[in-house]
Image 1 (cartoon, rainbow, N blue to C red):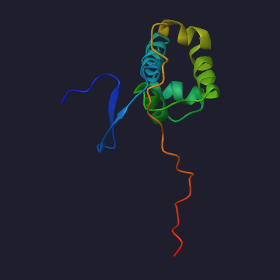
Image 2 (image 1 turned 180 degrees about the vertical axis):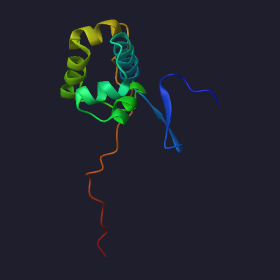
Image 3 (image 1 turned 90 degrees about the horizontal axis):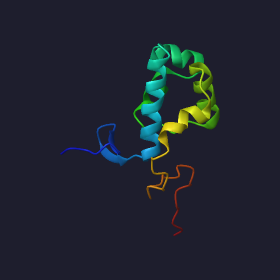
Image 4 (image 1 turned 90 degrees about the vertical axis):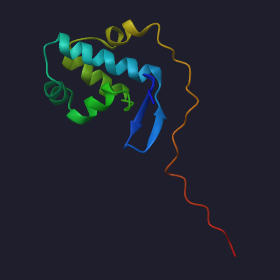
Length: 111
């Protein structure tokens, strides 16, 4: 079965629908570090995040904070506006998918 660009398998168990903006952001960050002639490892070190997190962002499965994006932009010598500018045609409409709230306590049945 062929997956669209907006789908990915996480831990080999299920298919997760990714937001198009996250996929586009990851692609853009990869373009920027290639253009800056940096490695993924160097970018991660300069942005003060783990290399695997940069990889997750590039694959569209991580949703970085604004602070993390600012650190990445600083390391790449680009502004946030420059990072997002080429993504003007990407849909920002909600995907309809929501994360499960793991902080919700389990329901307990009273006997």
